[in-house]
Image (cartoon, rainbow, N blue to C red; front, side):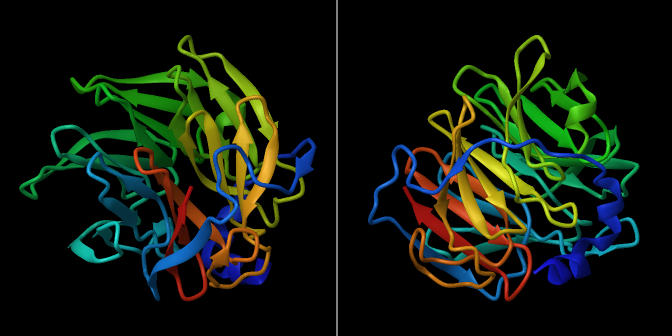
Length: 309
């Protein structure tokens, strides 16, 4: 498993110089998950292996990061996918795309053309025209959006979280050394920003004044610098991908952690939550109106997986 991941992302492992602390980890179903819920595969043999986002209509956007070459991913596409798994469209001509978010006007934003020193936030209009909104120092990675169309962007190589307001204002709203390594990002019901550190498996909450506090560190899941891929938040429950251990975790805002899907085996097998398997689950997003999780796989055949909560 470690060897497979390293083939994809080995040059970045040197960036992951962090340590994790231990908290209690249990293995049971979390709040709001039906015991008969199952994991299914929407698309198998799928190139989309990175970030996932879901728009207000339930349409899924999946980034093809590809594998790490030179200073970024070699993927070039974002796939637009219907809830039934049909690929509706493919956005081409990108460079290692990662986090995405769609605003209320139908504009799609993506962290694009990252080179570990700086990356671009690209805006793709409904008609297809493109505009670079800003360039961010470091490696802008994950992205989320609030109901006012404000974007929030995590950073893998810089200790920052940026906000891009709906009017285009760009600002750093949190700066803390623990945020370096951030990828997964979402918002809770109070508007606090939740950020997961890819390298340490630590999850942080950032309040509206920019204060950073630790929610928890998921123990014993970091291998070769791979910890948490991405996160999503539903009803103040955090769902996180254990990219190296092939589990999906649920974490409360007070840090209680449970395994809710996956048996730990690196494979693409459907079935009941704890009997199903994932091949290095990475991206995760939720259709919060329909109670559905969508998950990408970083290695293996590749797939877009679905969990109906």
